[in-house]
Length: 98
Image 1 (cartoon, rainbow, N blue to C red):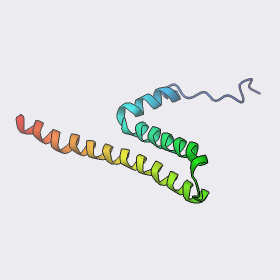
Image 2 (cartoon, one colour):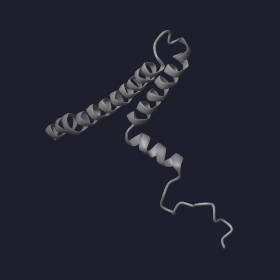
Image 3 (spheres, rainbow, N blue to C red):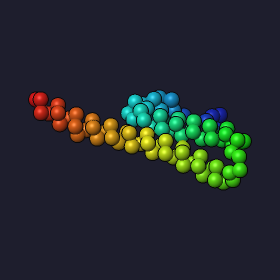
């Protein structure tokens, strides 16, 4: 039996979690922004749970979910628009100059 039976060591070529996260962030920077926005909105709405007044809890939670999803979808849309700009408009103008 091995002494390190409970520990898993990634293969040599794989990055650890923080390096992988930083690499993915450099590739598409709007994903972490969308996740952070989603978490901030959800945390704020849960914080405001006490001051919801006469609104039912289920309605408040639905509004929280919709606001958080809107932030995430907005970040995805901005990323898609930036990618389209970079791939089609910017590249076409660079090719025309050559």
